[in-house]
Image (cartoon, rainbow, N blue to C red; front, side, top):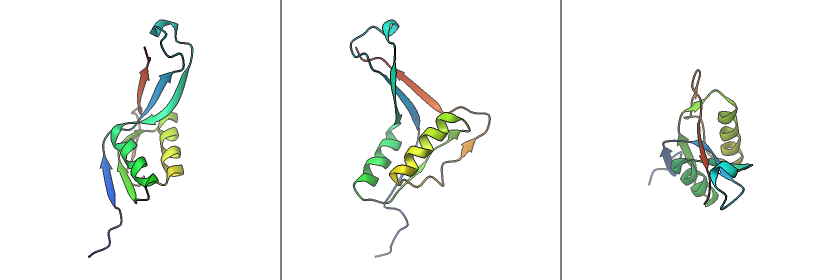
Length: 100
């Protein structure tokens, strides 16, 4: 059987997810958020890597601090990011969530 460079390749959105720290508060009363890396393909790539698979992520990131945040996280997790170009003039996706 041939040996492949990656066990799993994931394609799609990456984002910074900002979750409200004040669970149950109306959105207008939220005072702070916790930052996480999100996007289904991104989460699957990280999860599979944590299970020991060699994973790579194909996603576009803005050339901005949020893109830096996501790339740093993925590199710390051992996910291959060479197929995830930075897009000058574009911003990386962000999601803001209140938890009621």
